[in-house]
Length: 100
Image (cartoon, rainbow, N blue to C red; front, side, top):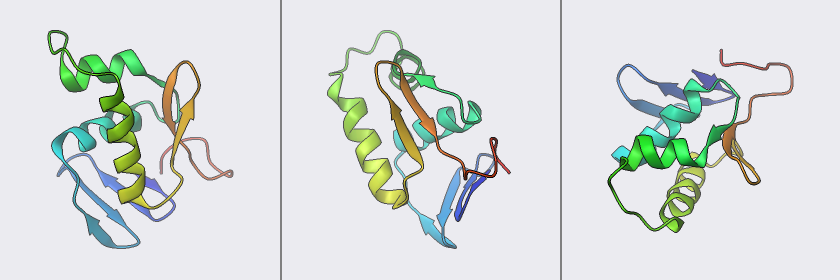
């Protein structure tokens, strides 16, 4: 999947930005993968909690916010949007509505 110069390869679990490999933690990649599978749609916070940390894993809700902030910083591009009260989604260029 490509969002401008951010390339996410779900098969080999790699991410590049402007051709440079970006090292993500396992959880950061899981979050990015879930956002990618929504193809620009909103991924609910509860879905992220359940899929990344599991149903039985008690986590501080701020953990997700920290992981999103770190992921945004590592990507260095405004590609993750917060949808207030719902969750997060990937932002694609204005001329497209889905991944390339």
